Length: 171
Image (cartoon, rainbow, N blue to C red):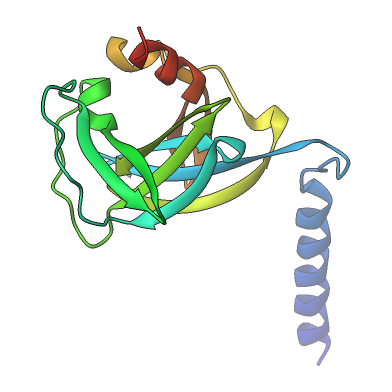
């Protein structure tokens, strides 16, 4: 019986020690919403304030004489929205559209468009301080459109800057 009590005490002491080492998080810290998605087996994200809607992929109507990254247009409840291949825009290999593919409707100021992504993984609320500067090893074509980087499931998530993307498209 004494041996059992000693083991219990040891376990309780270890639990107390571990809990005292836990990181203290400031509950008043500002947070930011991130929509995490997949593009060509890598995690990317948009700030939640820039994402207005996430849709299953409807029929996309091709529009001739447009940039190669413009896939076409969709009818979204009576509004015509352009759909962009962010893969082509960023110089990434094309991905096949699948059941997990989605269109993220993004908007900054008065500019709005749909962006085809391979899959939407998550919508996160993270502390603002968790956003870091992007890695210097990023593809140069992607680098100029990056707003920051976070860690999600032990993987790097590159946060894309919607405003920079739209500015480049409108040049």
